[in-house]
Image (cartoon, rainbow, N blue to C red; front, top):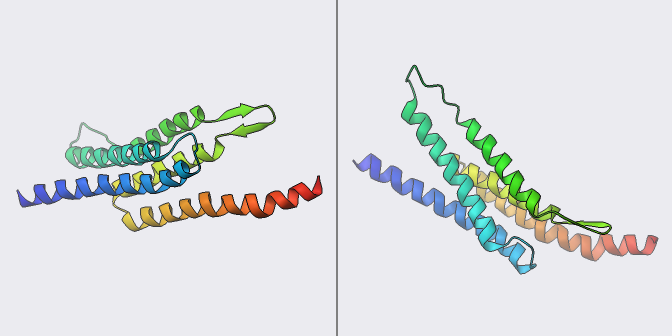
Length: 155
């Protein structure tokens, strides 16, 4: 019984961690007033984690049964495809520019972070979330303050 309780607590903590890491990324997007923000990123990361956790639970439930062939990596494949569908919904073409590509990519990598938490790779998930924030915030500043000035001078 203790194993079951400890296992449930670990699963709850995994879901909380995925939600917080998604919120961490979503906060940056919210701060920049992007299409998808705190709630969207939290939900994508939580959902990816939950699907992964459920996949692992099903795998161990049916492990060793001769009639059942279960591959948990199929769930990850389905998550990637599903999040790709969500990402496609945030991409818009406006005259000569395309908007939402960074948001779509952010949602995609946030789902991967949720998967990492679901599998139990907490350090990898946390480090990846930090890298995502550095990319979204730091590279955004680099684009605005340096690259745009260089490109404006050439035109």
